[in-house]
Image (cartoon, rainbow, N blue to C red; front, side):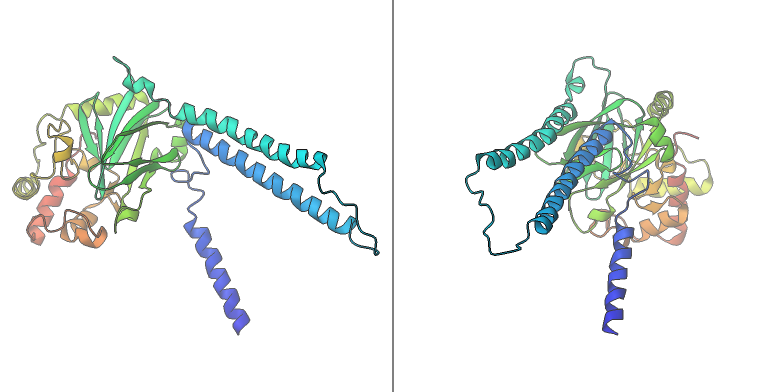
Length: 352
């Protein structure tokens, strides 16, 4: 029985390891790179792994060969090699060569990945996005386009996108696993880097990548997700134009949604903006911008985008994201008020 229990335990750990590894999905996996940055980092991972495996194999073969061929057969003392200059040179030079083999491409890639000079040039046409992390949501500001959105990052494919990263409260980390390595968002300084989204790989991922917070930031750290919508340059320009056309808060079209808009203006407007041109200072933006809430792929980054999940979120946001700052910021709403508010929010769209 003890042996059977042991194998059951091993089987459970094996299955958990397979499930929790998260490998294989094109929208999430670092092992299926979807851009220039991810390709470079993946190549470095393969190179370092090959070097490591090569060293292990060579050492193992030498060990087995010596063990078999030179095992003690009589009382004679084997030839002593202490002080051999030849051997000392061999086991000193080989590690140096291996380090150089790994260091040269690593340093080259590091300088290339750190090159953000185009975003600082005057009159540059580089696309720059200011990313601000908060407990537990993300804001994306396009300074060149003068629009602000949240939770869903929209980017064009096949061109470099530059990011300014900062945090409003605690340290977070911006990470799109399939497209590039993570970079911290700090409260005291701005970090900069760039990513490129490959159009063919984006198509495999359904033009939607998963973004994560990679820094332990509190009880809802694992739920601090965002999504990245990719599109070609023409569609991206159309999206920007549609966002810029929203000059005033969208008017509700149905009687139920009009009731919801009144509830929103009474209880929510002090925290949530519903126009992309948010003139408030970044530090004063207390909650996600909802201008295109109806177009988004998830609610609060993790829930399915439908009316039922939206009601669940508004009823008890603490249940879905412990420690979020929305809890207790508005009065308890009746079911009729929830129906109206949901109808209004789901109608906030900038594109059909």
